[in-house]
Image 1 (cartoon, protein in one colour):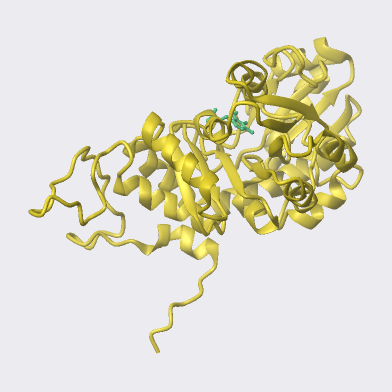
Image 2: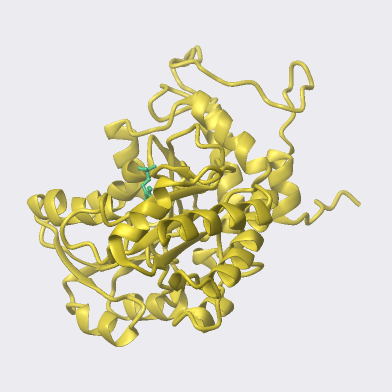
Length: 385
Ligand code: PLP
């Protein structure tokens, strides 16, 4: 009779798991700001709250929503940024451990792996992780402890087969972690495909309003690796602030609405732009001609995400001239907000970037699709006049 209803993630997220404030019965729980908590008379902490660096109720509430969205049996952890979350995973390794990472990935993390990670004694091999033969060849038996993926990967939107990569990693005794920022838990749940850890720049579509910098990890199993990551966040103090966690939770209540709409718009724009006379190529996994389309169709549900890139006829100068004229699209870095953004990536990415100079990255927001296309069409035409 009292069976718990099995509601969908969409329902659970819309109500932020249905938590009601016990004092006021408010449908939005308060923001908890206390940094310290009263001990019991027997000197214990029966509430489980000891000190604000690891313990905060607002953080835990937001983590529970994310863990539900990612089907994360071992729970989730929020960090002060996506980079803080990602680097905590690498810091949980030991000096001398080997990592395989994608050649096409978020540029700042690639740069950190090439500089800081190697200074800490980690060994990194970059390869095209979407090519499973290359991925297998990059593994160093008994030395490789972590395979890192990003799919779809920034800014070329290559797709890696998560289940196949998990198999390769696990056979070698390595963990698999996936940066799923640009898929979002609406379209892909990497833990259900065999990944051990999933990472998000929660700054992006999870929050969705370009007003919070946050990062998140979620794990399948509460094993020694995850406990090490938990301890790193606790000891190094990388936890998110409670106000940001509250905003993130508010954002996640509308995640499904936004992600589905943004993916629909991205698909429509990608299709229209592919036929544009001033566009050489559109990179979007939803397009049948994209090399990762078949894998994406298997591992992404309900859409292919909100990110795409276009390569403009006329090279770098034409790409920059196109971006220079936008009115609806905002010329800014970042992604995943309700407002559409455009960026010439090659000028921001450092050495070793696989980004071609004629590429413009688009983050599709929730605006009217016809208005978005008209803005890009005007700019492309003006840049080619
Ligand atoms: N991963 C991806 C795919 C990103 O796009 C970003 C930021 O743009 C990050 C990680 C890093 O996130 P943050 O800027 O919150 O540190």
